[in-house]
Image (cartoon, rainbow, N blue to C red; front, side, top):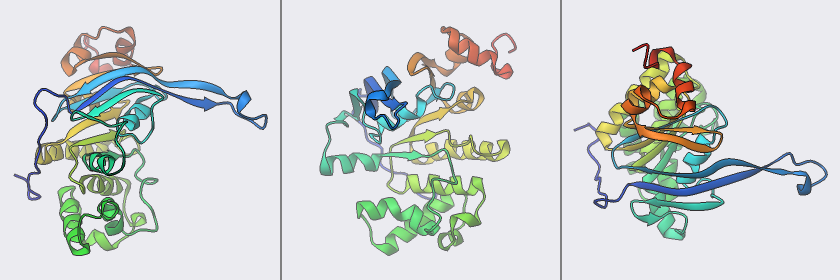
Length: 280
């Protein structure tokens, strides 16, 4: 058991924790002074369906612009899809309103890519980490501060960080703060949106190992978004591959990295020598 305890982890037997069906999202592009008529629609996610089982890590890989981040945000309803369905533990996320949506949001959190842009420089670390709890109004200030200190210790930071500001920390330390913030509401599902791509390799490796340990300590489920196949192979139970807004392949990590079926997946593997099946 971790020093922060083990949180309740209950799901409906036989129902995936996350279930997405036929998700579609387009954005306007090319607008100008001529107005909306000159804009075109760019398909960011095109008819994507997937499931994520409780306790697993689904790695989502693909080149920049393939739609990975848009898909992750749609699962959390941070971006509204044009069409499709998202269910979380059997609940219709897109149909949820008011208090029901607030309850769902407690269970679904995100860790952002940029540890510099995702933390408000005007707020102390205590204010940043406690912000989700303040929004949901679920604890007293003393209770929030105590839990924030516990979460900081869980991610490898000292309680003394509470009164400091983001500019006083390195990129890796800031990402740890972001992780602590995501943990504050005791979520069950976390989307990690390229959480190490802005960090040095050695620091990124520490964050990846931290995420792996936290998953064990707090029984978390991850969608781990990355363009790095070695990192995804290390963390993921299964891997989904996106190309140009579409999901082209999904399967167990060993199958995807050893015997990929889609040509694009083979191209990604070829671009990563240490993951080439022939090389192994």
